[in-house]
Image 1 (cartoon, helix red, strand yellow):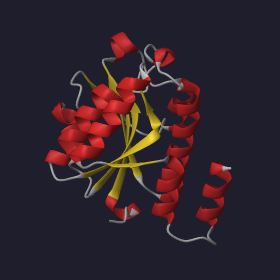
Image 2 (cartoon, helix red, strand yellow; image 1 turned 90 degrees about the vertical axis):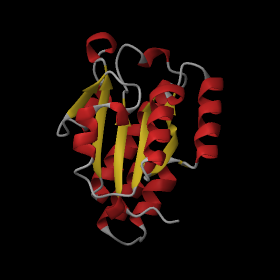
Image 3 (tube, rainbow, N blue to C red; image 1 turned 45 degrees about the vertical axis):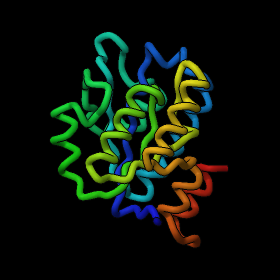
Length: 180
């Protein structure tokens, strides 16, 4: 199954200030997720952003906050985005099949959202190098479970070029510069 840009939505889940310093490989995840966001925007893929209980966990981390400043953030208290009424209302406005997912924590909010999206008939595409947990073991087991449940596991570079489909365009040049 090909992941097509016009059938896809990006979802950035809970990459927040107070928990993020404890996430393994967080600097690399920040870099990768920034590239993913810039690439999705260049290709024209809509993006949604969530924050889990920002009063307690803070807001989206600054490097990413700047990239998504034009996107309304959905505050939630449910672990799964799909259990949040405002998220579900906004999400339903998009006519898509695929949800390209980055965020934390892999074994909590990302996992539960992925399972619920599958149950609702969507195809989650979990970007392995843009998700994280405090424990690498928790992340690895969650990735394996999501794969077993039917999620597609990819990387930011792979998904951007799959969405792009063709070289020789201005968007291709922009994506190429991003991933270098």
